[in-house]
Amino acid sequence: MDSVSEEKTAIAPKYTPKWPETFDDASVKQWIHDYYSAIDNKASPQAVVDLFTEDAVIELGKRRINRSTMLQASRSSWDDVESRRHNPQDAYPLGDNTYLIEGNATYVYKNGQSRTFEWCGKLRLVMNDGKWQMNYYKTYFATEY
Image (tube, rainbow, N blue to C red; front, side, top):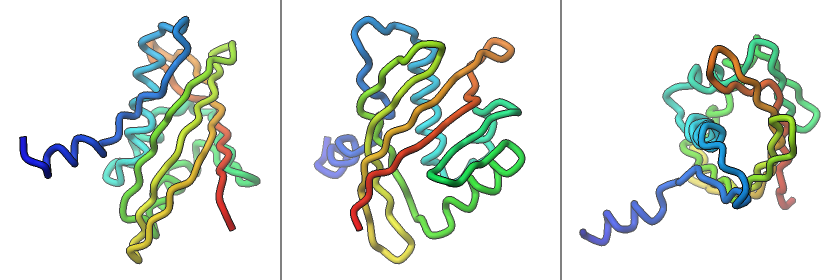
């Protein structure tokens, strides 16, 4: 393998946080992987929306997004962004299908600048027609000013 391929492999996102050893629900682990993979894919904002229930709410600081505005919010999140990569690092089951995910994300902006910051997300999943969907998500960002 050449060094370019090795470098790409080394920096490719895994989207797989570390879970407690006692947590073994493979379907939830896969859903978390699929969610963070989807939000980093500029080409398919609808795929992100499809991971949420019809009554879902996202809280980003003081901003609340519901299902009716989610597609536009997903699209506009790319307005100044060339690429982004979320790296979920740790996951904690909180009970009642609620999870806390911690990680970092690197954003590369269209102006060429990049920024890495820490985040934490609290989410709740519900089973709909045999598949997991999110009905609540609150994200906290750690940024330096």
